[in-house]
Image (cartoon, rainbow, N blue to C red; front, side, top):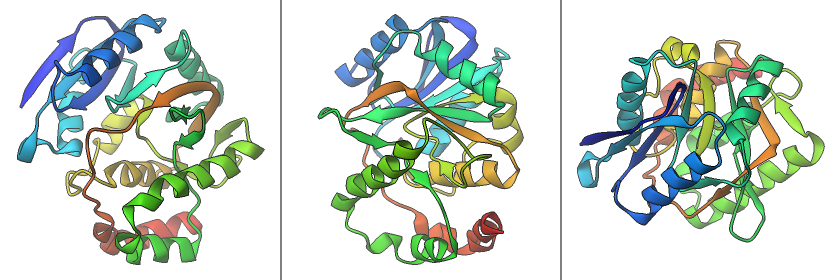
Amino acid sequence: MNIVEIGGNNEIIIITPTRDIKSKLAVDFINTIKSKSYYNPRIVLIESSGVEFHFSRNMNMGINEALKYNPKYIALSNDDVRPMEMYWDYKLINRIVEKQLAYVSPLFINSNGEINGPLINMPPYLGVLFSTTFYPLIPQFTFPFIRKINSFLSNKKYNIHDSSMFPGIINTQPFSIFHSDILKKVKGFSEDFLNGCEDFELALRINLLGFKCGLDTTVKFLNLNSATKGSGGFSIFQYKRSDMQQINN
């Protein structure tokens, strides 16, 4: 386990787990994020591989490191995303302020120019039963299609999405910017999850506390194929089902 920091403005700090800080994936991420930013944010990279790689634990380590600088905003990012336009950070932070959001995510585009995220979850009662009971049975190759359908349907109707005007939860990964106070309040990710579903669970907890999230479709990120393969974890939601049902009420 290794923590490496790339200096910059401490008002916004980006947390990024990665398997190898010297890899092309990580280096390109740093260069693109920095070159297209307005604030030149500090970046905290948490490097680990093999059995040491635990996404939620690594993220929490990075969040704790970032909080030492008293940032106003903390971005949670995978290393396989690339901003597609200048001043992405300025625009997303403005959206947080304008809409009074806990966090905001950009729109994600794949290499073919198609929308593929973030996953917007609208959990009716049957959806909760489905996701907690049958999710492990869904073939992995269908996930990109499910994400694409969810995102397309929501983005087609709403330019700026927030949970006060549309009953849904926006996934926090692969990239989102938070008010740092929110992450302190919820105490980051649940480490019960091993490289899968911890981002969805974090979004659920924030929603249950009454905070709003947002999707700014005017800011676009390229989403590459991840080098980190998730191992699932929705079975853990079995004992959290009552919490999720509160959302529907």
